[in-house]
Length: 162
Image (cartoon, rainbow, N blue to C red):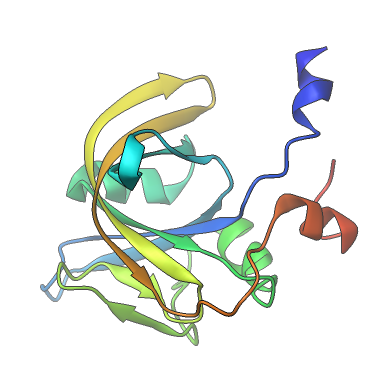
């Protein structure tokens, strides 16, 4: 029964971006799609991000301990296939993607509504996902007039199942 109940939840859609080896010629960047992101402290000081265990992003986050949570806009539906259905192990997900690097050398998506800079302070196994508990060290609003991309919007457009 719980599985059916949770389908009623309308999650915001995010792109998680990360880097390992920032500032070196061997820097590796990756990004993926995540809907399970939750504020876990008053004042927005902490977030918990659920990442699928088989994703390349987890490897980089575990190595670097940093990530950015990019809040996607409804004009960014093309990122679902590009960032969510292909592996960064096999291709450069940032090729032809508008992005910049923050002061830590971690990428963020310049067309997103904004992003939260996060430092991982813990992780918890959670079935087929790993929960990364993060301290938010900065929040940047880039495009305040855009509309947040949600799972319901993606369902209505036929871009996701369920």
